[in-house]
Amino acid sequence: MNLRNICFLLTLLFIPSVVVAQEFNCTVVVNDEQLEGTSFDYVKPSLEAEIAAYINEHRWTELTYEPHERINCQINITLISGNQENNFSAETVFQIRRPIYGTTTETVSLILNDGSWQFNYPEGKSLIHDDLQFENLASFIDFYCYLFLGYDFDSFSPLGGTEYFLKAQNVVDLAQNESTIGWDRSSNNRRNRFVLVSDILSGNYDELRTAYYNYHRSGLDTFISNPARSRTEVVNTLEAMLEAKRRSTSNFLFDLFFDTKSREIAAIFQDADTRLKLDVYEILTELDPGHLTEYEALQN
Image (cartoon, rainbow, N blue to C red; front, side, top):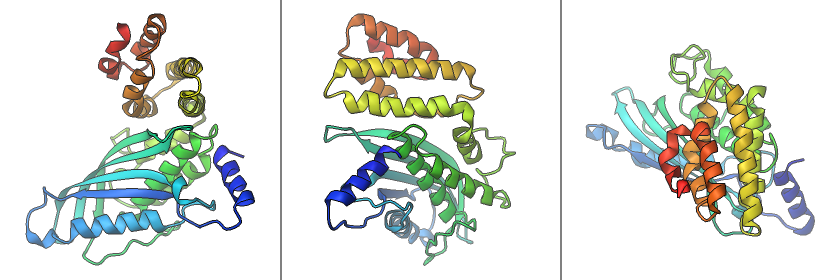
């Protein structure tokens, strides 16, 4: 049983009346500046409200969340084009956050950019959740909500998010009979939704997912009480990730991690002793060469 489940069970034991709340507290922002003409004026306010309500009011798990336990997230949607049939293309940036134990602050646990979303959205359309049918707007949101849950649960217990990654995989499977971009296994884009969830569920990346858990639970969650031990745990995590990366065939999941965490890692070690900072920098030069500018201060 993972940590989230244990916390929920303890809550049920000691609080006689539990307020049932959904899993997400998500903000949705739509940018429609690239759309031309007044016929699309309805899209921004309607789509923001519809997606936010769909995410925040649906029950995505069988667990009971209190309001303060909801997963904070933000979705920024930039509409690139639209036509008279109300077909739109968009780029979307997702961010989810997780509380750090013993503090009032949060860590960004995932930042992800999806540049290949096409959907139909006529005025007055409502989103309907259906795990058995694919629909290019609702299913896109479903996929990422299950992905968010998977990452969140992975941060609280080793491989704890598998149930939700499998639900995201189910959305991908439903999409295989549709001719829409971003879902196809044969796509030239080797970093689409199909590849993302396939990599996550591949046993080849279990070590990376376990390292993701260790980073949050043994690293961030212990930092306030014992910074030295926390830094040691983060170093151990980075070393484990390096070994996993040397054996991997794709950097996709590693790049997602460091696109999200590079600045935070640099901040963790900014007050460490010089020897430790140099050791960490040496690991990161191989593990995350794409963000070396973030780590330059570790050489001082």
